[in-house]
Length: 545
Image (cartoon, rainbow, N blue to C red; front, side, top):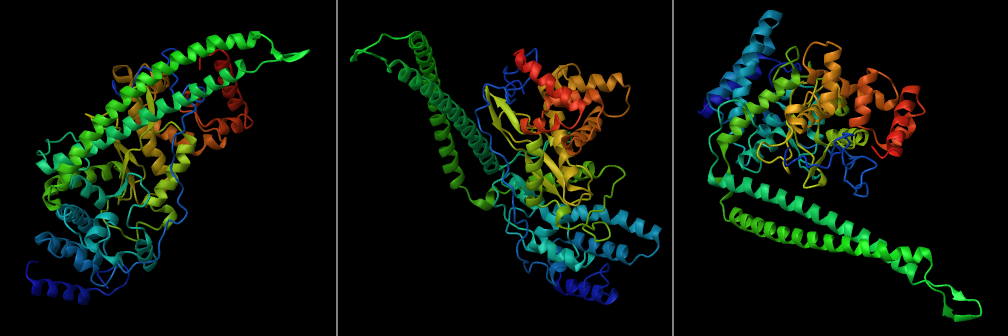
């Protein structure tokens, strides 16, 4: 494949061998602070929380999920993917041709089995080039698993060309090629694995990783300041109201210049003002300390930004790290597809019959996440230093035929406070909404398990669910059963359709509550929801919720 004449002959023969039939060749200890009530198990983001005045951001729905078609899938696309990849490109070409031309099912299955590992080697080879300017065919091979344009229909080719390329959303949602580039430049760490430790990244990569970590600390500290400022304004408003009360006086009827003494309500404001002033003094001290910490973190960030700015961009790319990450992404794809699923590594119209509504593009995933977060508003909230922040995990869109998304890790091992963790969402699932719900259910379970630590079978969400699972003498993996129930919770129970066991519904209602507006609606949809709603009211009246 290194010789240009051999390459030309290879593609010429491919065109002569097979007609363009549409299927042929081309044509937590720090993480979880003690803000939870040990008796009720309630979390600080519940409706009755003292922090209920904090407004958490959510996903913004995207109306336009497609752009105008782009001329990216050309006649030379297939050649553009394979060129420059050495002997692996020739092997992939031969195996792909044998697979597409096979008519006997057994032969076809045999060629398919041989093709899959070769395609993986090709992806790994391309992944090693993510530190460079990558041609569109190679990028789309990593992003959409599109190797041969004629393996998909003209309508699907048009659809691929309409998917927005750049991330204009500001959300940490990455296509596979984008994620590999983040890893190559050290902006994110390699995904944790149980295999041999990845070789230490180069100095430039370490600098980029430290830079990203510093940005996360500055962002977290800025939220601490915002909360102190909000608390100060609240107390100042209380103080203003109290002062206004004591400065208003009734006058003597016979002489308006004679004001009457303070009444009982005004005199009670004296102690209230004293209490507020003490609170303001404490808040002011905490705010000063927070600003000192913020300024120190900003100095560190500026130093790292200057250090990163002096680096040669190309030297920062760690191609070995990207190639290793490609292996991990393949493991994510296997988990998403499952043992009995379709592990074919390329986009093929015989296996994907959907349209844009069924395709896991960045825009479609964001819209799906927005819907699910409304139903489970605590899914991305994390408490650190007694401050609850919304931290959306890194989400990697994997070009595979997976049925369920997976949570690879809820947060990074050495940075549980501000790290995003990472989820994997299949791009060509049977049902995109179910795939995303499964990933978030997996995230819910892993975060709750880490929170309970050694007592995960006894305490909190996982403890109550595990006890129910054991009492029912159910078989299989308890986490898998939880994810299936979480899917029913979000997709069915949120609509008032009772699909869960009564005990499971009680657990979810308590530990993963719907928003209050939905609760108000569900209480009229059946006796079971009315009873759960009544329990909420009883807890609120007993001040134990």
